Image (cartoon, rainbow, N blue to C red):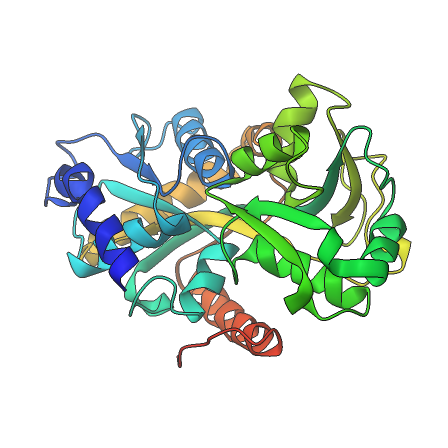
Amino acid sequence: MKGLDILRAAAAAAMLLACAPASAAAEAAECVVPAKQGGGFDMTCHLARDMLRAARAERGADMRITYMPGGIGAVAFDRAVSQNMSDPNVLVAFSSGSLLNLVQGKFGPHKPGDVRWLAAIGTDYGVIAVRNGSPIVSLQDLLAALRKDAGRVVFGAGGTVGSQDWVKAALLVRGAGRDHRSMRFVSFEGGGEALAALRGGHVDVFAGDASEVRQVLLKEPGAVRIIAVLSEGRLAAPFASAPTAREQGLDLVWPIVRGLYLGPGVPDADYRAWVAAIDRATASPGFAQLREQSGMYPFTLSGAALDKFVEQSADKYRALARQLNLRVVPP
């Protein structure tokens, strides 16, 4: 807990105003990105702001975006819970990876039920990528290299051991018939840093998210090569030519749900008002286009339905963590 305490102290000043009780009508809404700029959390907050603005929702149309890196979401979650955050103007981005970290105790003593889950507004999918010019040109090439010597392949991704990107890499190594504990994994604070390391030749393979790679491909086509997408079927451009892992003989699918939560102290009336605003925005005619521009795919849930999904996902991640010999905290 010492590391988390240090991060908590460093973020205290930044979150002080955000966590102070305020009138929802008096202040503009804020979406907290619990990481550095770029990456999935950032895209979640931008999509939330844009869709609420487009739908002319009563809440969130004038939303500002702030950043609180630390522990891939741990600092923001800890501050929301430990201060019983009650400001109805402050939303925080989360992903499926947040739930995976929670069940492993990476967010401190907190549990999934400690915040108010607001809405899921889209999903992303895992991808496996290499730099342009890499001798690895397909998933089968990667699996062959891992079978030969798993320790010679260096994976890079956002998050530490047990994070969702680490899990993707571990499942690949297991898919090659090797012990995942033999793999080499370099941890970065986010997908943007990991992709920069990939392009610079510092790591061999990137295990990350489609939305992160999409930004690179749109700016510099051909900068990286996607050797597998971890979705049920092929994704649309710019991934249309990239085969799924299933097409290449490995049954590995990894969706990343993205959404928002509120502090545990937010009043019921404000929570219901936010659910109504989000539901209106996701049902509006222009939402699908905004979601596509954000690099996300269809998946929306809110309120009680999202609570049930979070509970079921946490159970699934606990079982997976045990399979991978990771620490698991009781529900």
